[in-house]
Amino acid sequence: MSDLEDQNKAQILAMMLDREITLEPLQQKVFARWAVLKAMIIGSSDRQRTLFYGEFERKSFRPPSFAMPLRTSVWVGRYAGSGFHAGVTYVFAPVENIPQALVGSVTTIIVGHLAIQVLTTHVTPKFSTWNFDIRILPGRWDENLLTLLPVLGCVKWPPLISFAVRGPDSIGRLVHRFKTGEDVG
Image (cartoon, rainbow, N blue to C red; front, side):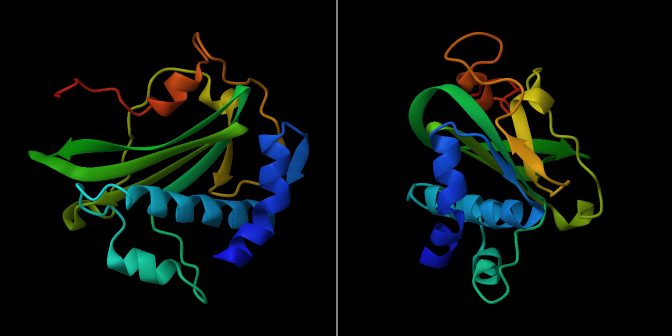
């Protein structure tokens, strides 16, 4: 774990402190691996919930394989303020009368000016070959967020638009961007 921390220290510090940087594809993969590790740790901190990341995913993630969980995406954004947040939200999608055919874990981490979001979805085996569209709140996500996983080429930090304390590009909308259904308590 400390190797992963060491490999990411410079990039994370630069983004936390709001310095411009470019992330090459290999740096993005290593950063995404670190972000998923943090998502696993944050997700396991609530003893009241069943672990989202299963034993196979956790063991496969360890060296030497470093296998990322399937159906995982990682994004980073810039917070105009400076803050700290670490939380997990679960999302569900019904298919063919199966209310939780897809279950997703959304982990959002905010440290200084750096906002990180990790989404991993698990799909009922019957639908494992399906592509799912997960609903999100309307927003300028392609301008607010940089995609690190899947890797799509070099990315330049910071994104075009920063998250603010309030308004249509608020940091709260990022935290809740996958919460689009009815609140059932």
